[in-house]
Image 1 (cartoon, rainbow, N blue to C red):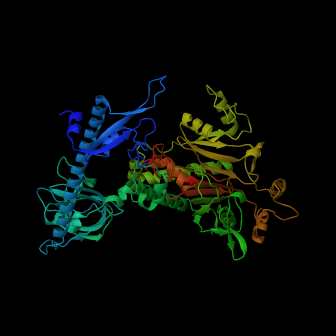
Image 2: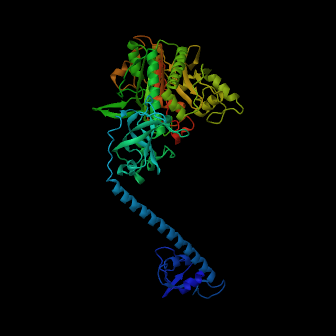
Image 3: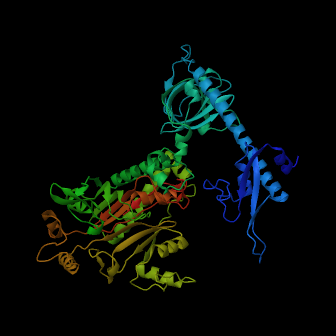
Length: 616
């Protein structure tokens, strides 16, 4: 039956419905009257799907040039057929939606019934089985069963990382912070309990069973799996809309507000967890390396009344009526204790009030700083090369941390030694000799005195493709307390360590050790007048200029933020919590040392490489 015929045979209500394509409305403001007509015949038909059919009239405008008034006419058969066709399609869609809703409701009712029935099932551990040995998931010394022998019965604690429910069994990837274990719960009462039917990601469990080798052709972490014979749920986790997978996802941009607000959940992910574990390994590598180099570790305070990197980046607070700050760097404390303890280092928090959302700006970071006594500039460069290389070697020699690097940044290569030495003046010449030249930020060839921008620096490093000590920067673009090169007073004994793919990861310099020269530098920069340091915030800091008198310093400092180094190692753009490193001989400039990988971008792009060491 044609659409118009079907419409004609429907019971008539005697009502009239008006459609005006020009001024009508297909919304709640229209009622189909002549004064409030609908805009389309399709919309008008929808309003009377389950009601007696009215008579439909469409407003027809007079022919062009006519003085007649518009008229209300019965819709053309072609227009009616088209509109009824759309209505039929709409009705089929509604029918499918209703069918799906009915199916969903039926499944919901069956699930409710199954859940109620499941509460009657009570699991009990089989007393005839061997006592279970409690192990952590990284314990690989336990004997595994196979077709010829029984494996060790163990007890493991953890949380659900992945969950797959199948007819024959429920598969759980269990994590405990030390490893991951595939657990197989065979179909039966074990999978019919209320707990089993409500398993969700991050639920905390203790599982008992036999450890076996994975069958040939199958895969699982460490090529083993736990065949579960008993379990207990220690802590449930939300499912459905409240599940963790609906809160955070590795596919999301890590800088999304939702990801940042749920950082505590992000850190439960495999990549974020691996980053944090690798960070620990890097910190241990620094600690071991400094100890082997006979550095003493000290713990300077975070609450201070001194400025180190300038007042504009200080976090200020009230200290019992006095103005105080969160420390920008521990270098002043390290300089003080160095004279009685020898070479020293620390791993402490530093704070910078810089409201910038870049990987080079951190409000709080873990600062690794060191002060080296009685060294020359070449000694400083050798120390930096040694500490960087030694830390990387230690991390790669550890099979656990090496596996994390392989997971997060498979293409990571340790730096090639010796590092290339390149003076600032030579770098300027190199940039201008390229075809085409690598220009400065103003779009012009570089000239002596330019502060080489990060982009140009990184491009140069990537082309040369080896670690570079970029040294001897002009006096005008470096801090006033940096020591001048006695062979060329235009430049300082300063250095930036550049790594391919990252750019600057560490910076440092020799400090002035001549008292008169230092005081003149203070005066020139307006921080010393009439015998007092005008930039000091307390009396204790007034004594700082006397240090060169009470024991001439031949020293240097460097610094690194742990976050940057891991950016380089991991090929990422951000890490969980930032960390930095600083070394000094008495050289002073902050340095950023990052081990980041390009792919991390979700990573901090997929969290693919999430670690960074900031050498500051």
